[in-house]
Length: 639
Image: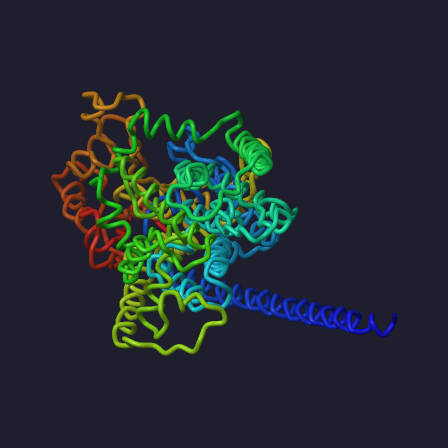
């Protein structure tokens, strides 16, 4: 009998050896992929760190006033000089975002608490938010690339194309390392999309496979944990920016309706029960953390998304900050977001909807879902009158992934389907002059916007801070906030024990045209700027709403009258005279008219002297900001 068993035993041994060899090979491949991912993350972080150092320009006020100012106030107290805008006083914003950056300020302040060199601490406080945002930007790029690898295959040409597009996109270079809530929203969205179980959209139909071997969804601990991570990240993205909910509603709609999807629906009672349980659990966890954070920040229970909807939709205050055409995101948003890859993005959007796809079912359905996300988000946000390009920035991961096979096929010898084979076949570049021209355009746009365009506002506040350090070296030390929200008195930390009363700088620019306390730093550096708060107590389309003018509009309507009536009235208390006045060169004639002999302000005996000026770029979206930004010294104070 034993000789008859020998062939069977030999076959079993052979199968075991083959299985062990295959397992060893799989482990080796997995380790190589993991090592490659770690190396890629290191490279991405290095690129984004260099990116953060190259960004020295001013883009939009929200970078500072919607995150860094409340973060500064959270760490250094209510009397630290931070500018609390109306959105924070009325709890329109989630405190999660500034709390994250408050942690960066807290670390720097703790490290330099005993240092006698306040100027060094000031520089680190300015750099800290950039360093933290660099981490978020790198994670956004890395997870976008990892999602491309899941769809197109590890080390495929298409997945590497995604990484190159992300790193060479001029809009990303210009904005990714800035502290906008949209940038963190993009990071959270990219991470959530990576962990999302895309098999929920459909499974391969395999009639030969028995029920035991049929593919399943949310059947392992790893799958469920990834689903939980995705839900929590998505929940925080929605709490951070309520409009992000459109992305997840789009995915949910596709899962239920299966519109244009391929394969077999995985939804059964077990899967739907797990989904409902996890959505409730993860959503409640994120909501509880958000409510606790907002309770700590605002001092009472608040739910910012409701306030956001009330003021921006019900009271229609978004119009106060500008209105755009309904086609803005299509005619300007996508082209500026994608620049030179826009044709390939459009091709990817169209091709993803093909009924016959060469991709596996999961990849094909995911690409359709990404297209549906893009179309749904743009259609929904186009209904809102106030539009900004960064509102659709969370779509960038999807846009890059959709464009990848087609930009790869266009510039290499691979076809669109060949771009997703793993490992990639040998390829050669083609259309090299066009590729070089596209790269050059990206470098020029990204370099100009990041290094030169609107650099003056940053440089102006740096000049004022350095002047304050020179003139008042005994008023540089300040402390951290205590439990009641006030600051450990910087008056007590000054050597002479006196608090400065002078108005160091007066900003006669459009409101929020420069950074504020995050760059001015010192609480004793008192500054005043024109405001532009909306008419909160007026009804939409009412005569009061139409007649309302904020400080900025009143100033630019008649600068001399504003100075004489609102700022320094002759027969009523007014502002202190400033040591420095900051404004764009267009107001110089009006300032001279006010201060000159015979002018309303001649009693001040001010002779303006230009002490600093900076070029503000080749173009501007606000003619009031055209020309140089200038700092004038009034000569009112003796050094």
